[in-house]
Length: 168
Ligand SMILES: NC(=O)c1ccc[n+]([C@@H]2O[C@H](COP(=O)([O-])OP(=O)(O)OC[C@H]3O[C@@H](n4cnc5c(N)ncnc54)[C@H](OP(=O)(O)O)[C@@H]3O)[C@@H](O)[C@H]2O)c1
Image (cartoon, rainbow, N blue to C red; front, side, top):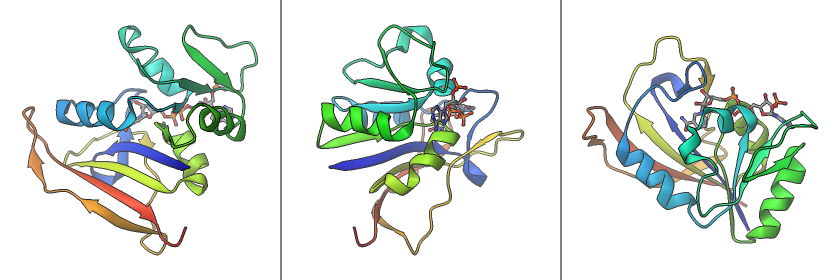
């Protein structure tokens, strides 16, 4: 069983601003789709809210949404009220791979449960960034597959990097 975290970060580990992702890199959107399709995804309620209506629920994936609000529901979302329950439901649906897809609160909470980090580094400065990826401690995580820097059709340079937890 693998719990993976997937995120794209700009410079200084920025992942969001004003509850949106402050860049457009279609290659990364495709990568996200390829790495998550067919597996449950776990996200915070704010990340669910940030998805455009037409993308919710993300298709061909069980969408598990974490909220503290006992009355919250959304069509196509499996609601969970704590991370343990969210991961239990996801793993029950797919014992192979569960992918935690943010945002900052959920990454921070799920980091200790993760075995794999699927990170896109995007060479972009985001003034006013207000959501951040966790730090990747090199004594805990080793690069498994460090991609080449490539220029997006939309301009920014990006690279894909997988990290595996050391010794688990
Ligand atoms: N670049 C990327 O790869 C990427 C990926 C995903 C998201 N993002 C960005 O990240 C930002 C959102 O991140 P965020 O940290 O503000 O929000 P978030 O992590 O998406 O969601 C936070 C919400 O999740 C619920 N929650 C958190 N911990 C919980 C727990 N232990 N038990 C139950 N519910 C819990 C709460 O919902 P309630 O308030 O309803 O209780 C909380 O307000 C946005 O800017 C988004 O665009 C970026």
